[in-house]
Amino acid sequence: MTEPVRNIYKICREQAGYTQERAAELLPCSVRALARYESGECGVPGDIAYRMVRLYNSQFLAVEHLRNESQLAASIIPAVDDCTLQTAAIRLVNRVLRFAEDHRDRQLMQIIEDGVISGDERPLMNEIMADITEIVRACTEVRIATKDE
Image (cartoon, rainbow, N blue to C red; front, side, top):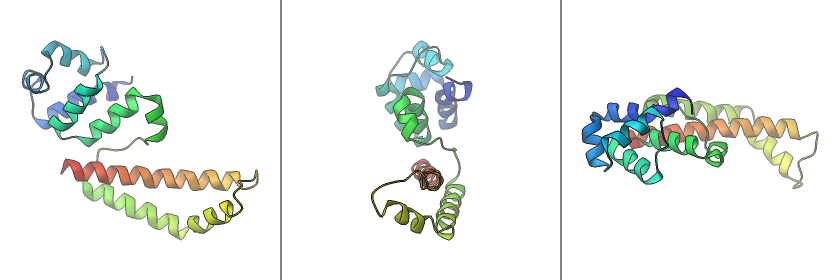
């Protein structure tokens, strides 16, 4: 685990205004266990992570926990920024507009029309998928910002 991900539990607790003692009491877990989770000394069990997400009111924590704890989840869920709803919404609209302006929808339809992605089509398909991943990332940021408001 990298240091920022390891500390996401502590960061979210502090942002929610809880001391370790109060958070441990409400989760429930021991203060020592919470300190170990926050330091990255040991992984956070799913049920405790779920309680943290609810207690700290942080969907960002949910996404980061899933990405950190599961290689499969990390391969599907894009990394996101913890940003304001305004920033997230602007990013989403900009990415969708850019997708449309670049005619990615039409390009996608042309590629998949025959049900086969040829070797010649693969580079463009990869570009389109990268654009779609950015849209998914922006959608997730809007969802996170909306839940945290």
